[in-house]
Amino acid sequence: MTIKEAQEEIIDEFSMFDDWMQRYEYIIELGKSLPLIDEKYQVAENLIKGCQSQVWLHAEESEGNVFFTANSDAILTKGIIAILIRVFSGQKAVDIMDADLGFIDDIGLKEHLSPTRANGLVSMIKQIKMYALAYQAKN
Image 1 (cartoon, rainbow, N blue to C red):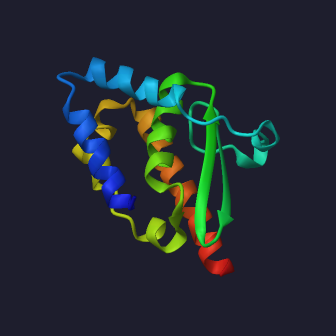
Image 2 (spheres, rainbow, N blue to C red):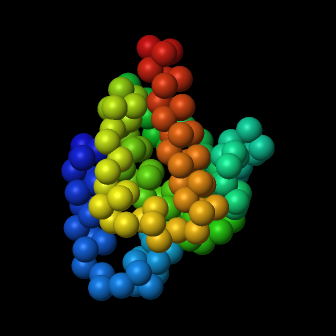
């Protein structure tokens, strides 16, 4: 599945809900389904700076694709990183770097987060793109 296809799927899923309470519940459910990050990667150097909650993000490259695992100590934040991982994990670094993130506005996520959580979202995206940039430069 391409980044665009994953984004469109998420937009479709969010459009099924009538209000933001339902969407928050769905985000929390997505967080519960996030594959657990290996504990050895839940270390200070994998913490995302700029997040109010603790968010650990780890990336590995395999056969030209970048795979992400993550965790957070906050249930809503865990759901947010789960959405980002669903979109970006398993993609080529160049595609991650070039990705249009309009889907975040399309689902209304940023405008329904507190300012600190919105800053955290931006920090998560920045870190994902930094990993992609590093793998792209390596190759």
